[in-house]
Image (cartoon, rainbow, N blue to C red; front, top):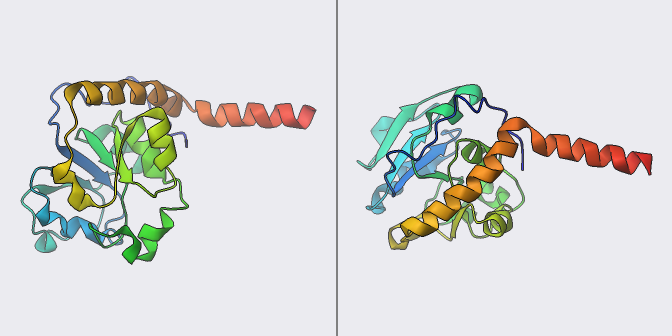
Amino acid sequence: FFDYLSSPEVLIENSSDLKPNEIAFAGHLAKSKFVYTLDKIKNWKFNIYGGEFDNKKNRNINTIWKGEFSPDEVAYKLEGSFGLVWDGSEASDLQKCRFGNYMRYNNPFKFSLYLAAGLPVIAPKDAAIAKTIQKHNVGFLINSLDDLDEIAISDSDYTVMKQNVSVIQKDIIAGNFLRKAVTRLEELIEE
């Protein structure tokens, strides 16, 4: 995990008035063209964060641009029950563009952003972070965003995911993953 230093007193808990099918996506929207192709997905609302959103291209009444915020602010602004780790131009096929294929090898910083904000994550099944999501049960995996309407998460499953995120959230916002890595490196040097 990447650390995402934040003040725990200020972070939104993201659980008081949950809308179960509400997704937050934060990113560089100029390369995330898929946000304009979400009109086939009827049962989920998308809250979009980032610069260069073109509302004229938005065909989905359930896709709402929430604004552009600095990396220091965005974790406090995210609204939703899940954070979306996705990239590229297609909602249906991640592999059709170089950014989507890159996710097979990349540990995206937005993964830590969502966990820092207390949100379970939705990600591609073949993403580099997929095993981590499964191992820690901090979200669910899909082949395509078009699969979302077929997904049903029970309240109890969601509660377990939120509890698991909460454990990791504390370490991410406190910088503990870097601290542990440096400590381990120091131990290796001393051997």
